[in-house]
Length: 85
Image (cartoon, rainbow, N blue to C red):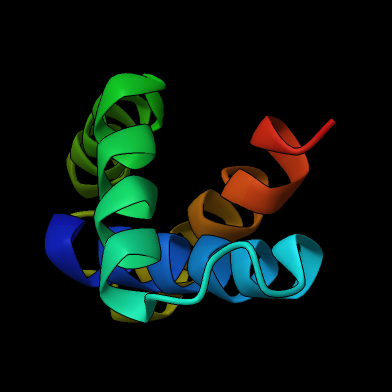
């Protein structure tokens, strides 16, 4: 689960990096590497892992509740909102 949400957050951030840099980020692979590094170094990755663990502890096998928690985690940790202020 951590990798799934992490991938969504990194690709969302990559999309915004490509939009705001308007040509300064010509190499998508280079920008993707930057997005991954920022995900790891910003503390967002650690936060997401902790929140997922807490969600699993609280909701266990209740898939409906867990899905809502996972969506909330992704929304609350959008890198474009946290890092591009």
